[in-house]
Amino acid sequence: GENVEQHPSTLSVQEGDSAVIKCTYSDSASNYFPWYKQELGKGPQLIIDIRSNVGEKKDQRIAVTLNKTAKHFSLHITETQPEDSAVYFCAASIAGGSYIPTFGRGTSLIVHP
Amino acid sequence: EAGVAQSPRYKIIEKRQSVAFWCNPISGHATLYWYQQILGQGPKLLIQFQNNGVVDDSQLPKDRFSAERLKGVDSTLKIQPAKLEDSAVYLCASSLGAGSQQETQYFGPGTRLLVL
Image (cartoon, helix red, strand yellow):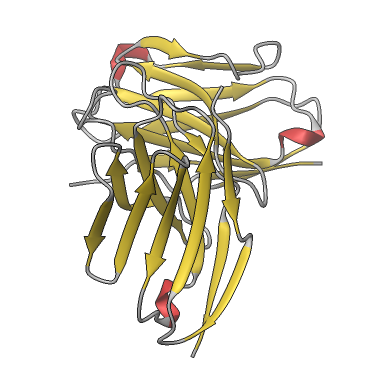
């Protein structure tokens, strides 16, 4: 089955800095890669996703890059703000048919004012 | 639109007792998922429904866990009897479907279970 590794487990940055979270996956058939933000006491919320036919996707301060050859994808957050503090999860799956995502273990991002 | 609703939000039970969680997905969402999230880990899929049929339950401990989705809308997840290692947050999610462009999942707030 799919295996997703996520690094780092904790990331501490100053407000205004950039943050990068990296994930690797094992199943070359995976073609859909969502990123979730989970705040304390809440369920995960989708913040951005990317499909295997695209190398990069941006949404304001958030961007995701995908390297299919190396089987890794990354989340980039620019101009971090204290409200970006949360746990971020990456996931990998095969979209279409039975969609069963495998999640990484999460990265706790702390943005210091 | 209303989000995914879950209840209760918190539950404390003793080992060997039984417990049930309820989920109401977003209206019109055909696919419903139950996840177990142990502290410090990512969500792990327990069971996936498409309408009222089970698509995948390969990671559901069937000797103690059961789930149903009657009429293809609400769903319940039951644990009987509970073990200490079942302490976790149980998340329900729904999506329009499982096909391409339909798989975006919307999560509920979760039920935090503590087994003593």
